[in-house]
Image (cartoon, rainbow, N blue to C red; front, side, top):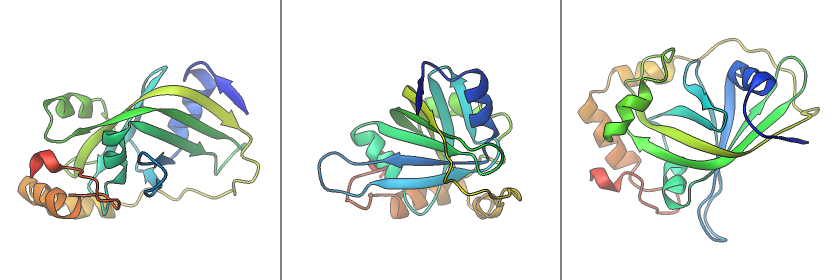
Length: 186
């Protein structure tokens, strides 16, 4: 394993080339559920600086990442090479969720120029990266990338802004551990 001072050059190129990454967060204390979520879709992840990244967080079945970030800010993003030379890059840091209802959300969302339809975005996850490392990835399988799924975008096209607010209230109101997620909207 090698620890890097910043996201630049080869590391930045590797991160930006990956069609998928994983996000890990956890609540405070010994209890609660650790959450790991796969993320993808071209244009939904951006390197914003040598120690800052962000991604678009679309409405989904859960919102554990938002609950955990609100509680403690801890987050790890992991990128794996499923094609080409083996490599794994981990970005450890402090994140925050900037919800669609925040005035800052619009300005952050504009940084994602090549994102697909952003109508279904519920927040931007903004991460200050504190530790950057890469490791071999020798055990990561080789797999071929066929393309992004469009089901999430198509599902959100059918929903109005009011529908999405209701979705957040009903389906994203609390985390698996009973932590409030979008309580400020209720």
